Amino acid sequence: MKRREFITLLGGAAAWPLAARAQQAMPAIGFLNNAMPESYAPFVAAFRNGLRQVGFAEGQNVSIEFRWGRNQSARLSDLAAELVRLPVAVMVTSGGDQAVQAGRAATSIIPIVATIGNDPVDSGLVASLNRPGGNITGVSVFAVQLVAKRLQMARELVPDGSEIAFLVNPTNPNSAIDRKELGEAAGTLGQRVAVLEAASAEECDAAFAHLARQRAGALIVESDPYFNGLVERFVALARQHSVAVIYPRREFTTAGGLMSYGTSLTEAYRQIGIYAGRILKGDKASELPILLPSRFELVVNLKAATALGLTVPTSILLRADEVIE
Image 1 (cartoon, rainbow, N blue to C red):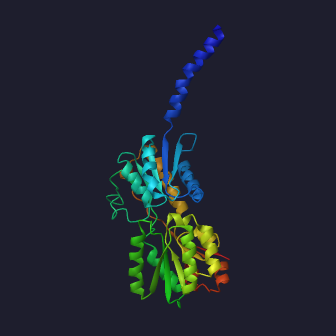
Image 2 (cartoon, rainbow, N blue to C red):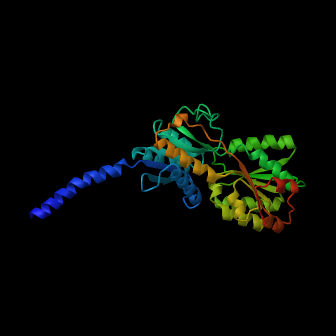
């Protein structure tokens, strides 16, 4: 071997461990979500934005390992365990409380930043909102607590509706709580309600067809990660069957739906990006308080109302954060 080639080879051999060590030094975030990546693209973008706000850019000083359940909750445990084995410095769990539970079962050591749909204290995820105390923190998206509020809005929207329907996903762990919340609110208001179940696109089609036959006054859609991935389908079904629908997220209304009331998922994912970055910088999950929504979004689509022959009450329009004309 020539002397020059030997020196070049030796230099490359010396540089390789340095490059490997630099690559290993980049922390990894595990991102576990129970839904489809396509439907959560805007929220992943918001998550990356939150990371950037605290100084982390994917591929530059942090890597993100994505694992998608694709609406198959049974896969989440294996996916969470896979992230633990990599290992990752922080695990983000989102797209439903099944992902949070899978992450919790997989590790009690790796910090977890979660979007949480139910009450995190009542469910035993954390000791308290201000000081979670374990390895889990995150953002509450108030998925359960707003069911009663949507029922009140449905009554305002269609005061002559004798029956209001509620569409739930029976595979969602929060569906039992949602039914209970709705039942109690309906009892207080003296409103008759019908609960419909759907866990697939075909069952959603059948539920809307049933509503049209029953002539229900309005439909309330449960806050559910699977439903979040069917925005266009839901809007098309509501238009096809002339059903007044109140959705849990603004994305449905901006896509042509009638009305939505809920927390901003975009803001929630930005916040969990910030929290993940703060933990990478040394903050402890046990000391980061569970964040509560700073505001709730009421969005009304007047085009959809006109197509349904509905007049949206002034009481709703005055409270709306956004009116699409």
